[in-house]
Length: 462
Image (cartoon, rainbow, N blue to C red; front, side, top):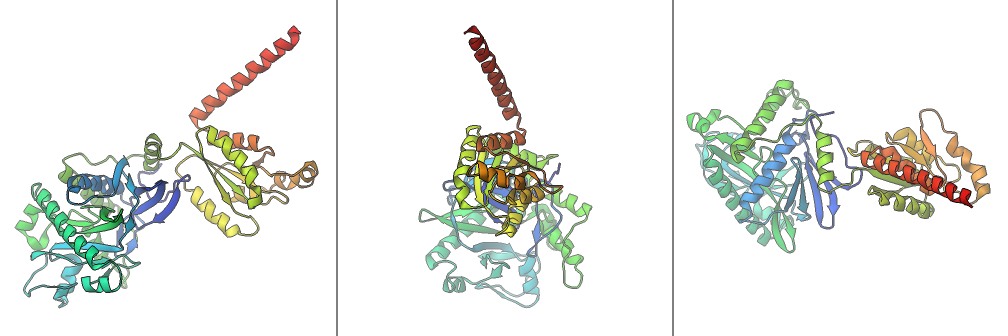
C-alpha cells in the first residue's frame, strides 16, 4: 500500500500524456480523464519525492474554483470522480500560459533585482521592492514547451502560438479571473499574488482548462502576514519548496529529493490553503491511494473492475483473439487486443510490460501466437500479470508439431497453455480473482453439476 499517487497506470484506458503532475487518459468520445498525481515539480524538474494528498488538493480545489468562475468563462470540467481525478471535455489546448501578476515576487522579482524593467511588454517603475504590490495586475505570457519561455504578446502572435483575437480574449479573461480570485480570497484573508491560466478551443470558443488557483499554479500569502512584513510574507504555496531547493543547490543543480520535514510542511501548506479557501476539510490522505482511485473509478463507471489484454504475435491471429474478447466481455470485463511479436519487435513487448505492470486494476494477459510460440514465454518472463498462452493451431498436425513450444517454457516463466479460445478466456477471467466473478463462476459450476445430474437421471429413466 502507498499513501501517494505517483507511478501508476490504468491498464484499460488509452494513455494519452504524462505531464509533470497530471496523467491524461481517453475516457470516452470527447471525454478525458485527468488525474492529478502527488508528484511535485519545481524549476522544470519533477522531484523524486511525492507529497501525500497533493494531487487531491489540486484536483478538488480546481473543481471548486471552476464552479465559482463558470459565469466568466466556460471550463472543461464535467464531473469529479475521485478527489484526485476529474472527467473533462476534450479541448484543443493553446500552448500558452496566461500568467497574471499582482505583486513583484518570484522569478519576476529576481529579474527586476538584476536590472530588468520591461516584462513581456509591461514597463515597471524603479524603486519597487520584493513583494511590493504592482501599480495594477499585468499579464506576462509564457510558452508551454519543454522549458517554459516568457514571450511578449506581439511575439507570441508572430510565432503562431495564438491569433491576435485569441490572445486579446485570453488576456481579458485572465484579468477577469484574477479579479474574481482576488475578491474571493480577500474575503478569506488571503492575497492572490500571481497565477497562471490555460485555455483550449472547443466548438469554436475558448474554454478554461487544466487547473485554477491552486498552490501549484498560484502564489498565496496570508493578508495579515504581508501587511505586517511584506518582504517576509508567509507562503502558502510551493514557493516554500522552491526556496528550499535554491538554498540547497550545489554546483548549479537543484536537489531532486526532499527531506521528511519539508514534505510534511509542504503537505500541511497544501491542506491549509484548501481549507481556508473552501471552508471545508481537505480530502483525507488514504492508506492506499491507488486503491481509492481504482474503487472510485469503478463506482463512477469510468473503468471496469478488471481487464484482460490479448496480445497476438501477428494480425493473422485476430479471429482467434476476437473469440476470446467476446467471451471476456460477456462477464463485464474490459478486453483489448494488441499486436506484438516476441521475435520481430521485442522492444515493444518490454514497453507493454512496463505499462501493464503498473496498472492499479486487476489484470490478466493472453498470448496468441502459433508455430514456435515465443510470445507466451516472453510475456510470462516480463509481465507481473497472470499469463495464458492460447496458440491458434490450424489442425491436429500443427498442434502435434508445435504444442511443445508452448508447454515447455524456461524456469521463472509461469504461463498456462490452453488451446481452445473459450477456455483461454475463462482461465484469464479466473486469474483476475474478482469477488463478483468468483460468485458467478460458483453459480455456473453449480448449474453445470445440476445439469449433469438431471441428464443422468433422465437417461437412467429411459
